[in-house]
Amino acid sequence: MPARARPPADGQPPGRGADASARPSGDGRAPEPGATATVRLFVALDLPEAARAALVAWRGPLLAREAALRPVPAEALHVTLCFLGERPAAAVEPLGEVVARCAGPVEGIALGAPLWLPRRRPRLLAVALEDRHGELGALQERLMDALVAGGRAQRETRPYLPHVTVARVRRGEAPRAGGELDPSPPCAFGGAAVALYRSHLGRGPARYEALRSVKLA
Image (cartoon, rainbow, N blue to C red; front, side, top):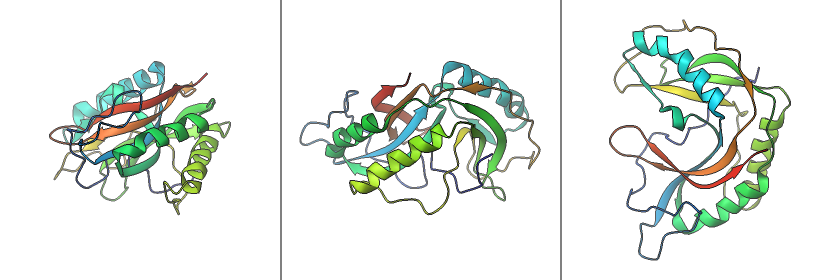
């Protein structure tokens, strides 16, 4: 199991989002001059359909008895590798190139223990991942090395905790189950793709837009 650590932000940390009027094209090109100056970005590993289906089936009974939880849409389930925050729209293309250079096969992932994060006052429900071959950790480290070397990110001081956020706690509410969580289902898989995402914040759940995506073998 990976060491316990503060989780990445899953593309939606506290704070205000970028203006949704700036919409870079799906091929990673920056908007035309005059568009909104910044976009909210993160890099993530996409899950295969089988893994998403297993997580959706597992969380179903819990959501039925936990009104405080708001599910993450099935198509938005992912593993955050690096949160980049607000960046100039012109940075999208070079960041996409970094993602493409760092991408590589990620096999030997398995669903691990479910987690309330943070433990005392949970804001989200997640499932940790077992990195059996070390390839997920290697991808995250390779990506961070490239971003830091290029002056595009600062290195985290805490160990990386790979996980998938499956639900968020509604504002002003608290889950009743506390630490009582059913074991996650047995499921082993490989990463489907590595992608640079834009996070659109506003009313309702965040919407994630893939600006550059690299499929993995």
